[in-house]
Length: 144
Image (cartoon, rainbow, N blue to C red; front, side, top):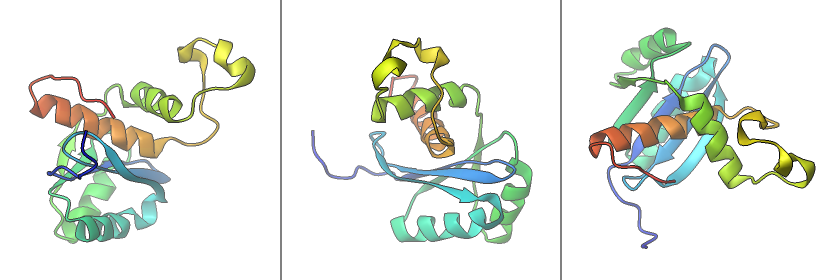
């Protein structure tokens, strides 16, 4: 498998009341960059990432906190595709633990009982991008 970044680049956002998760993903579903940013400054951070990385698609989760952020993006002339967030919390947990396997006694817990020790809004944004890519490919499973 090539390490070359495959277009299109997708910038996905998991909006929230206090913080937003950001994920930059390539056309193969590989995570290139992720971050969590305060909602108050999220639109500016999104604009910077979109310009720096020349992301072709901007995806905004349609759940909690999306309306004010959407308005901020419109004021910056950043058109975003609103996408469903159904299932992204569980997908984000799975993605987090794939990157950070549990250790010690936590390995014995069923996956559904494991809770990440930190916010995973960035992984939720990654899950949004993966789900969007899977829909675009006609339901093919996309792996990170």
